[in-house]
Length: 327
Ligand code: AHM
Ligand code: MG
Image 1 (cartoon, protein in one colour):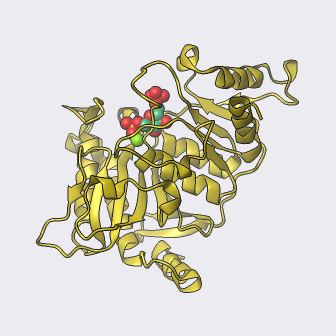
Image 2 (image 1 turned 180 degrees about the vertical axis):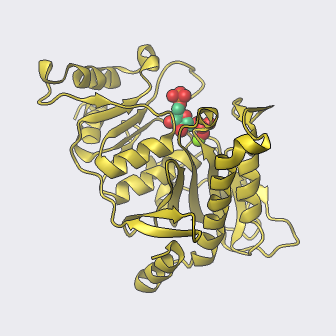
């Protein structure tokens, strides 16, 4: 079954917000991004664009191209009141030439883009909120993750997949490049509660707080330490790929608080990385926390605000949260 038919049926079954039209635009944009990522080397789209985004990160050409694809593809149909992206300093106003709708669409058009030049999986992350205003301003976007109507990601890997939730579980669709359809291939994705796999950028080890130091040390020691099993480790440096692996076979992903740069609470951004991924992970039976609080309950204070992220298999994330809170 194609994702649009699936969304239509889900809406009929559960009611709630009608986002079928918006999903048509989002899936079309993701298909175009898949092609751009796939064909980048033929059309001079690889490498750095020589510019920086608001977060001081060097933009890749594909960061800009994919941001344009996602923005243009979602501005014209009358579903959105406003758009906001990792790659744009401020919210994007829907041009007056187009009707405005009721939704806010927040996105990271090309997550993991440091990987594009080395042909490792990247993705697009998006989150849909309801706008409190016809002409939203920045503060209208600052809604807690629990308010999300839908969250999803596209993964541009060995196949292109779309994984999403509207609060009724998590479903995965694979792009059939012959028909252009995203076909339901992974219904009701669930994260196993237990795992023997963790993911963290260990080069930051000396900057971690004690609870994360303790957890990782125990995993590394495995049966020779206090744990009942040995652990394996993975780090792709594409959050979309890490979350997808965790949805498929369990695991823990951490980009925790660290003291590397005291001005930053973490690396990942709450609005278009942590919140949508948290919604998906929770809907698949997992847990998502800063270590001290449920991410989706935090009140965001800025569009590009960063947050520590610890998510994945319930029993392991609960353990890490316990190390932080002493419970
Ligand atoms: P990006 O949105 O600029 O690509 O940054 C986010 C990415 C995540 O996908 C990934 O988990 C993390 O940055 C990797 O960071 P690091 O290079 O520090 O390991
Ligand atoms: Mg990102």
